[in-house]
Image (tube, rainbow, N blue to C red; front, side):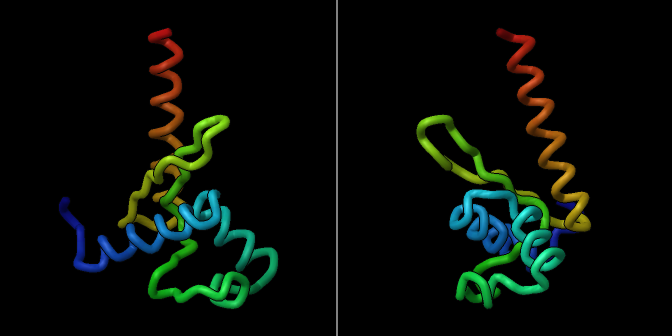
Length: 101
């Protein structure tokens, strides 16, 4: 897409790794670590920031009684906007599913 850079794929991979490992949105992890505890993923989880990123834009796809089956990830906007884009998409999908039922 327009505005995509060579780093976009790496950001997607790193955010997805964070969600796969911790089962929460990448934005939540970042807010909890940096805003509340003033620490990093490297210090808390002993992982490399080369492979993980706790910036907004990635969400776990959770199935009741199953767990995480995948991750929805976007990147390229400010992290709060990446987060908001995924939330909006998920809400719209759920609303559409409810209307179809």
